[in-house]
Length: 298
Ligand SMILES: [Zn+2]
Figure 1 (cartoon, rainbow, N blue to C red):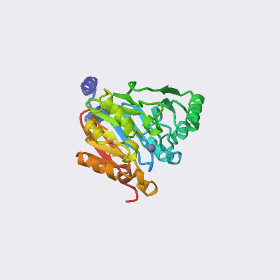
Figure 2: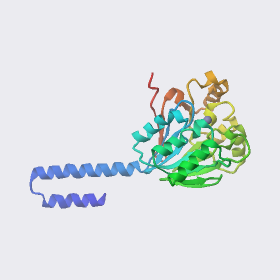
Figure 3: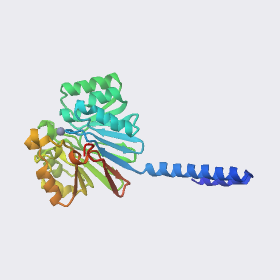
């Protein structure tokens, strides 16, 4: 910024014409504003919980880097791609696969074919057909594949991603979900994948810091996750559920009613992609700002 001030006075010294001076002032003012906005933008982290009906896909951006947590079902890839394009993302820095269920990994092969990805992060210990497909495409495209373990961490722009789970490589697929916590200044987000109470108990028994400002609720808000002990330990301001509006019609066990009530009793704001559409949460490292798109058909 000091260079701009110096440039301003140098220009004024040599410019004699009044109109040239005015234009020079305007141009320099616009450059200074652009620089200020660019510097300010670097400070932010945004997490967009993409409304893909049933499944998870969350795009996080911090300081020119991006992290896509899951890519939903294969059929919902156009929605994920449209979000990536509208955000101007030319390359995904990190693509994290929480586990091998179709509503999380199903869209990954198509994403890998459609947009460059720098690193794939996963904790799949026994790859099944869909993960084999992912690994083959990654090999063809020379994408770095990183198998993570609890305790690992990696940078995301000006934030840090800490891997907190899975704890058990043998249990049910949901309970082998990658759990991660993103720390951005004084703000933190906890992403539970589809972890159910079994993995939550392992997390609670661990020494990991889990107190967070935003909780991505486990397993689409089903009552098999998000026990009261977890809520008391995380104490988020905001809880987000990624779920389909009609999920409970086909599978009553996926009803979010019980968990929403539990979260609201704990006095937190609850948002659901099923009702709120895309949900964007922005952090400046100290405060949170929420923007919801709303459902298109409302
Ligand atoms: Zn799921």
